[in-house]
Amino acid sequence: MGGSCAQRRPARRPQVLFPFLLPLFYRALCEPIRYSIPEELAEGSVVGNLAKDLGLGVLEVSARKLRVSAEKLLFKVDAESGDLLVKDRIDREQICKERRICELQLEAVVENPLNIFHIIVVVEDINDHAPQFDKDEINLEISESVSPGVGTILDLAKDPDISMNSLSKYQLSPNEYFSLVVKDNPDGGKYPELVLKKTLDRETQSAHYLVLTALDGGVPPRSGTAQIRILVVDANDNPPVFSQDVYRVSLGEDSPPGTSVLMVSASDKDEGFNAEITYSFFGVDDKVQHVFSLDSATGSIRTQQPLDFEDVERYTVDVEAKDRGSLSARCKVIIEILDENDNNPEITITSLSDEILEDSRPGMVVALFKTRDRDSRENGEVTCNLSRYVPFQIHSSSNNYYKLVTDGTLDREQTPEYNVTITATDKGKPPLSSSITITLHITDVNDNAPVFQQSAYLVHVPENNPPGASIAQVSASDPDLGPNGHVSYSIVASDLEPRALSSYVSVSAQSGVVFAQRAFDHEQLRAFELTLQARDQGSPALSANVSLRVLVGDRNDNAPRVLYPTLGPDGSALFDTVPRAAPPDTLNKDSSSVVLASILTPSVEADKKAFKQSARDFVDT
View: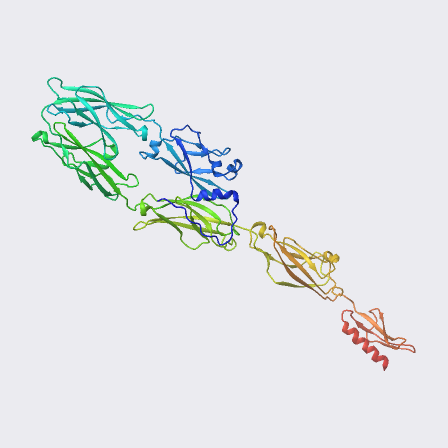
């Protein structure tokens, strides 16, 4: 189930890693930070300066949001000093049970940039438990026919402490009939045996009272006691004998209740009543007795409840065979539980970026997550993948931690968010899997310039238009968000005189509507061209230009004028203008001049030329 340090794939583009982050980067991948503390430290006790060990300054503790996470949060980080502090009571015996090495796995998370570091806190044992017997009184019956040297196994004492603080030895109160021998169990423990030193005589003394003391190896040692009451009886001089000292069996965790585990068997050389044997569990916890049953007559052991490898991997129980004369023997039964692939992998998101810029380069970490599978071996080995193509990729970190990083070009205008499904699958047969979907929102950057709806604009405006009237509207769109997509308009060039431009036209910065600032006169201004610009509010801003050509149309707004041709000194035709009331096409001749009158409009230049030619022809004739 454990993870390993994965070799990083070379990035497709060069990436800059700030020098002060290098030690953090490699430590986050492979090397855990280790601390060692005794159990039962007071709340607020300092474990170590985590910030210093991570290479962080005091100001970075708060700025980078240094924190720790674990399944059960027993520690916290001081936001001012960066010290790792004890947050809750740490009882090694409760947390680690009988494990020799008690290690607590933590993860330290920092942001800006986002990363994770692994911490191991070793909890050292203190001598906070005294040895204790299951019963305060041990009642024995020993036949007076038992020979010196025969032993009777006594109840065990238990001490949850470990190493030198655990159970060390037993002592027996001084007496002339019995001595104490401490023997080794097959599993490494020790048990006391009461050995007869001198033949008993029921008629002389029918009962003996002793004190059994269990001591641990602490300094000073702690102890527990049990009273031994021995009743002397007659004639049963052969204790039962098991066929094996240790019975071993393997059992799948999917075995249903009622499954036969094994059968223990003991024999007794005595005959009749003294050879009748009954079986019972000895010194077994109530929890184990709920899981297994033992037939007192046959020695058959069966399951009573479903088994769970993830809860208990192995059961070690003692079975006692006792004859009717209270002579007994004990054997050990070791039941190994075999793992089945009955747990789906679990995915936990530990950190998720709330802002992913659309111009982010490949390889940027956007999420951290971890997996856990309570099964063992291949049933607990997990691989992760993305269920469909998205521009992201999973990188394995360590200890079943993973990074979700960008792996392609992001375009908010095309895809503003991604629903990314992460699937974790174990290697069991058949495999089990689970999935989790996270939503990643893409943040806009100003990567689109405004675009006009037309490549160029042409408008016709009749002359004598009212000043202030709208003569055209240009429109540009920008798919970016917020200020990046907010467009304003302006006139940036024109073929009009720069000083006269503002007196002819203007444009609304908000709407793109072009206004005439004055009435246009076709005889003076027939066409002009403007260059308009659409500009967004990004930083830096992006813009686009478009041409707007304005044609001023003619209206019949000029009265006709009468031209009278005369001969000049050089014989060329000259024209005099007379009021419109003069009748057209009137010929007046006198001794000095010939006059030809016609009504013309100054807007028709061709008419002028034609009329001048007619006048010359008339004079010539």
